[in-house]
Figure 1 (cartoon, rainbow, N blue to C red):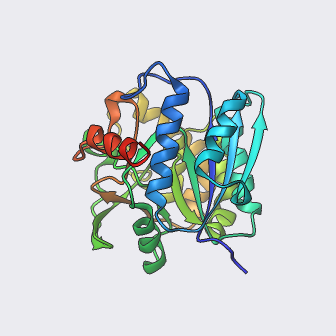
Figure 2 (figure 1 turned 180 degrees about the vertical axis):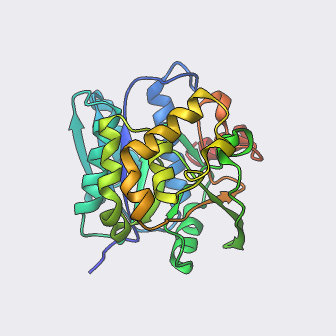
Figure 3 (figure 1 turned 90 degrees about the horizontal axis):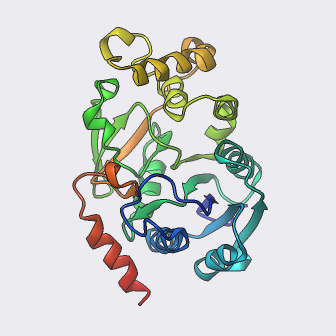
Amino acid sequence: MMQYDLAIAYRVYPGISKSPAFYSTDKLALAELGLRSLRLALGDLRTRLYAILDGCPPEYEALVLRYFPAEHTEIVHRQRAGNAATFIEQLDYLLEQPHAKFVYFAEDDYLYRPGTLPRLLTFAEQHRDAHFLAPYDYPDYYQMPLHRGCLQMRYAAGYHWRSAGTACLTFLTRRSILRRTHTLWRTYAKGNFDASMWMALTKHAVFHPLRTVRSSIEAAIMAKAWYYGWRRILFGKRWMLWVPIPSMATHLERTTLAPGVDWEAVRQEVEAAYA
């Protein structure tokens, strides 16, 4: 019997990557903002959290347990295993957990809008082709030729939803789907790109590369999609990926904030909720 609405694997690294929009010199404060916003975004959802702390000092465990009760949380300590290794740990925990049929991969540098994730789950429950859902309306969808052609649109749960060809590694799916796709996700540890894995799953643009590849980065993404995923591209199921508009969350890199949302106002709302 499933005890929770959602199982979450959340990975935390104490270093600062690139240039965050908030708390650019204080990773603990940045991580706390992310955890606070995730807690608020979940609303009344019953959640089981697996927190993978990669080389984190003791205060990070205390931080997680401040917002997620210990009886519903498992803390996993690793000694700087790295990005790819901790993603594989997320994958393993979510595959093996018996608590929820829906699973969520989360990273520590995201800011969420309060109360949004129940709607992400509602869309997944109500639409049979909602195989994967990413909460982040990535700016690259509007800027890179590689993303052209994802034209399916729906309105549900108070949001517009667009089909997408790729996403980052913060996303929701069913455990049953993860079981059918985990071999491809494991290629991330072999050097595959996140975008390349998504393209092998969604089959977006892979059969017409000359129409969409306009840069060396896009060429590398396309090449790895075929190198690691050619069997799935040619013989596997085409999976659908959906993204809400406006964005429910944003990656906190200053140059890639999701469009159409005042993220400073969201930050203030999150901070005020715990003042």
